[in-house]
Length: 181
Image (tube, rainbow, N blue to C red):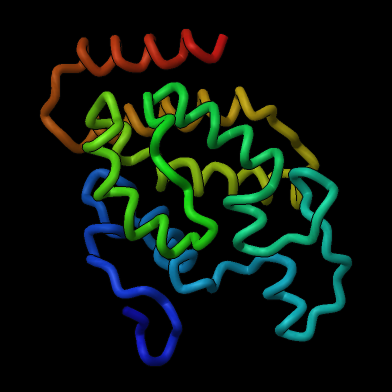
């Protein structure tokens, strides 16, 4: 069902606002769901005169969909995260808002760990940070470096906010990071 004003699928606040994920990242995901992040196509709609080219793949025009779903660089990052977290069967929809809505429902069906539940937020966030790093600092990371950063941050969020066995979390993280090497 669509919201009347925004054309955004209705979804539970739990799809966006997670107590373990830092608030700024939840807010970012909320703006993604409402198609409000300032990608180049959105800046152009606001009157900015900019050449529209994705800074990650340097091939296609940048849009929310392209940046977070269909970019070849982004696709590589998603594949690394899905493989590391045993989420290979988890679909990534062409509609980012639908994916935000469905990810929490689908992870228990195909993921191998509780930390994977937060992988969507972290992956979108670190793709956004990589895009901004390339634009504003001219610093580039590889998909492997971004995947490693995503996994380390998700594990860190969980340990920082929950009373969990740090040894088990460290073992989970080591196993995932070995898959990247």
